[in-house]
Image (cartoon, rainbow, N blue to C red; front, side):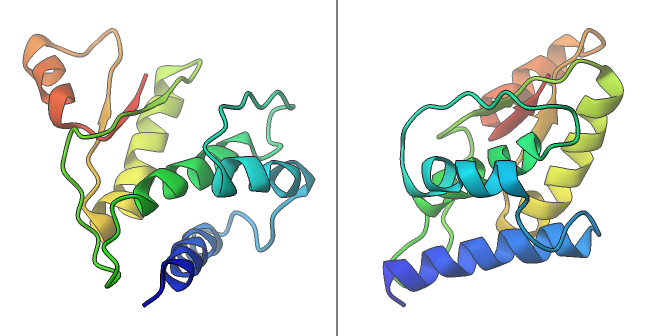
Length: 138
């Protein structure tokens, strides 16, 4: 597989994961505008948009961009736990727990990505587990 076809497969995976959860069928205007930066570049970005406008979907595009670095030319996914960190900041613990469960299903089961939560209730042993985590929600 070419790199281009592997990237398209990853994008397709994102769309499938999103559609399977019943969230959306197409990118909304915020996601469409952010797509070139979030998925096709390594430029840092800040997305300021109202609640429910698709900011988390933009972040998931950036996560897929990062995960594409761990695809071999044959298309095999070779993640090295702890080699990268994605940090997701949420205003409340319930949202942290929801996103960790969602991403563990989306990225963890399919690709072996490790998702952990870090809240005020996190104990010392769980904090040590963060070294091997790929996605940390706090």
